[in-house]
Image (tube, rainbow, N blue to C red; front, top):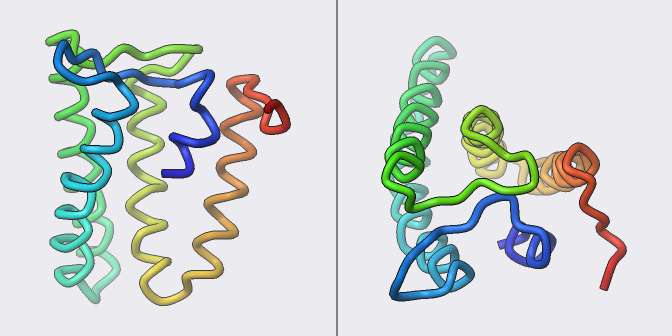
Length: 130
């Protein structure tokens, strides 16, 4: 949701859908797909570190593979220098932050905003523009 607000004028990716505009499609995916993911991801999170790494790896692979399919089918358009490699990195920190948020939400939000500033800097997106 933060992405939709901050990168509204300069999106890093756009869903290309003939039925809905990209903002609506992004919000639809956020509220349906991502919510279902969280409901499955958090309760099944393993206790052992090795299993945690594999579990996060599974979700990163799944999300990245689905995005790759979208790219191949021209259902998503990467912009402003974004590419599938950045999406994989995004998926890694996204799933790690989801787990951190479960036990330490304030820390997760702080880390999320730090990442937001880093991503905005890398892609030369001003956070101060109105």
